[in-house]
Image 1: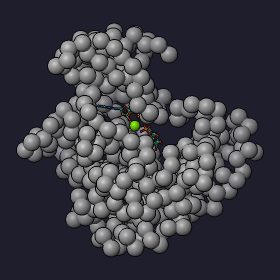
Image 2: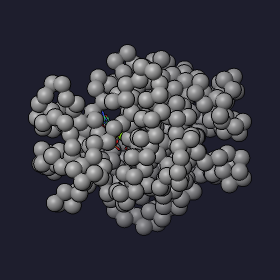
Image 3: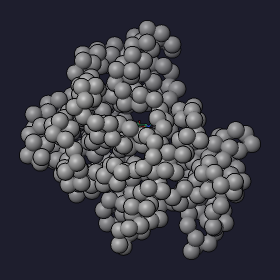
Length: 364
Ligand code: ADP
Ligand code: GN1
Ligand code: MG
């Protein structure tokens, strides 16, 4: 789809003049463009066409992001030497004062300052980077722990609720809308075998043993930007910041940080969880959160990567069975390839679970 990016850009109160706009990044949800401005001394921007099939209430979504970014900005401003434009997302208001616009064709758009000189990784190759990722997410949770006001709007209801995800999964298997169920019976078995164990975090929540906190809920590593020295810089992609269990954030980062291969690797023999990267991320994360988490939260951190890798695997598999309506895909078998890769990673985590538990115990 072609958009008139210059026209969209001009709805917003940016300082510079539009020069070029190009697709940017590898997110699975929105259409993201990098806008370069003519003036060398003005910011560049990220312009996003929002996916309103997935985020059904754009004003509430944007209201969440406004609250979160303002709170983070206030916190960071108090830190000597901080660089607000690079360490937190800054929304650019439209001329009507809102943080989003709806164009003539009914597309919703928002714009952020482009975070300059950042580094973004889909695969992590060193414990140092993993440690920095853990620190970034730990600090993010800590900074939001005292955000005033009502609870954040639930932008996608029951987002990480594995019981609901499994209900939808079972429903889609029954419906078999595009006739793909027969081709994925092995993957379906892998999911069903593990279903009971995966309800653990929800049960702990219902028993009042772990609290809901403000969590990010989409902490894959390419949503954590590093600086030119590979130090933690900024956590981005704030669409799903809302109440959640800390395990969701810890688990989703390990799913991507500690995987030796890509999220969609076709050759399953390349997929393993690297225990050293697990350990380094956990160290970074606990260096920021060790004092606030309760004992049960800490104890179940080792379980979290299995849960989230499984959950995302279930979601990819459900989307494949459903005919690819949710995640952006780049080829016909993309979602099943992603699902297989996630299930393979769960198996690697299962083999190393004892060691993961020992590492968490030694760090807490
Ligand atoms: P999606 O939900 O589709 O993943 P994101 O908000 O994560 O969308 O944006 C997609 C990609 O765009 C990110 O992975 C990152 O590479 C890039 N990006 C997003 N916001 C910024 C920003 N403010 N500065 C620099 N890069 C950004
Ligand atoms: C999506 O938006 P993005 O690409 O960072 C998805 C996550 C999945 C991830 C899998 C809102 O993340 O939940 O874990 O893909 N985001 C949404 O790569 O569904
Ligand atoms: Mg993203």
